[in-house]
Length: 97
Image (cartoon, rainbow, N blue to C red; front, side, top):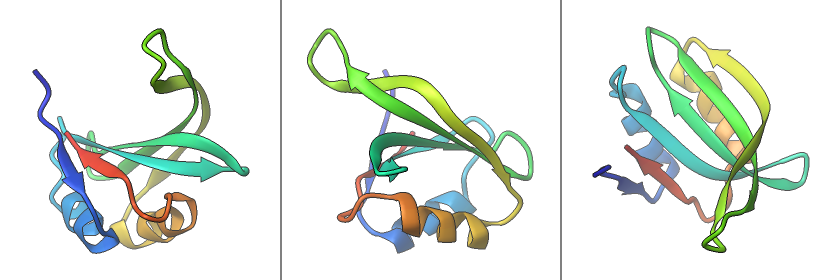
């Protein structure tokens, strides 16, 4: 079973990213190039890895990740949050796992 915690504000998201473990991650609903996307953030070492995926309808009718659109590394939370402020949906829909 996977435990997820809902993050409702950008400040909650930033706090979660600052304390993100190497085996944790964050999923954010966003837009990239005007299209809906999934934003996955991990921190396998000291830096943050951000992967954007397009979405598609799964067998259950829910949106699921499809193909990778972008992969980028951020060394600090500040620049990563600037990126997320521009790409995350408003209102924020994010989950820590």
